[in-house]
Image (cartoon, rainbow, N blue to C red; front, side):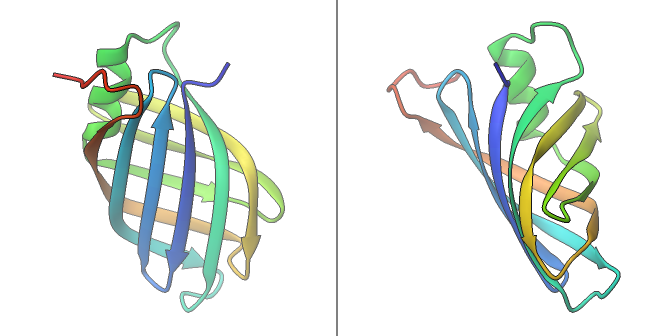
Amino acid sequence: MPDFAQFELDIYVFGVSATYTRYGDVFLGKGISRQYWNPMSTGVSISDGWMLKCDPSRDDLNNFLMDWSAGASAYPGFGGGVAANPSGAALNVGVGAGRAKAAVSPGMINSYRGNVFGDSWK
């Protein structure tokens, strides 16, 4: 089972995302995303993500998602990506659409928005 599911939309040089964890926590993110081959491209993806840590706890996962992160992804239909920050790293696999073939993000920042089960984190 994945650690989280993520929806991301990249428009021009901006990116926004929504992330839902296996613990029911929800994060919304925003940042900068450079589209390749054309920086005027748009792209959308939905993916499952796994932290590159064996059985991460809720704190491990949320601390990773809460922190600033950099990453790269490619979704020419089916694809994936990787993201990393001081709290860890994660691998995403999913599907995408749009004119963008790949994107590199020098920085995305997520904010915690609550828990769908009412079990607030911290």
